[in-house]
Image (cartoon, rainbow, N blue to C red; front, side, top):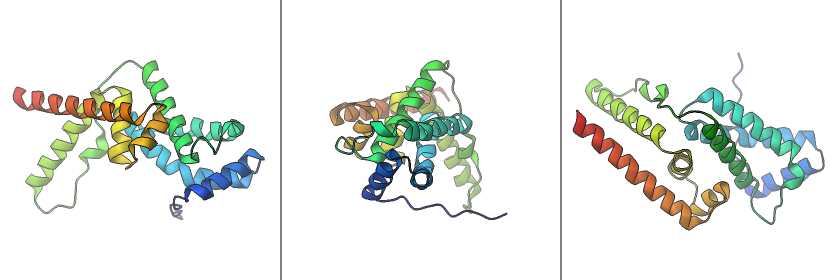
Length: 193
């Protein structure tokens, strides 16, 4: 089995150039754009959807299809290709969350054994990750998306605001409320033990 290398994330100017070629119907440019964007989209969707990998893969497929079918709607003067793609991903995740009934899910990936020498420290760290994942799953979808983009993807307030179609000030408030709710949930759980 041959392992395909992960393509590097292209600079914004390269992505914009590819998108302009996609607008002209260039399938090769679209294939390159897909390879450049699908990984980051999958990570964002997976975390936003609370670790539901199958749903995240579905969201990414729909988002990439929209990049092709709605290419003519991309306006380079209004923002970056990456920002537009993240906005599509976030909107699809939010739509999917609204359509499902709420449930608490713990991401099993957080329970994987680590290479740490101290089993007790590894168990404590795994427990903390599981508690955080459970608390994250109880946040509303917009808060979870904002937290993932800021802490998981390292995006700026402006980039998150673009993806969520809101203002940087609103993102700041959303992140503040999400952090406060996470602290409260984790403190309540610790007191109940």
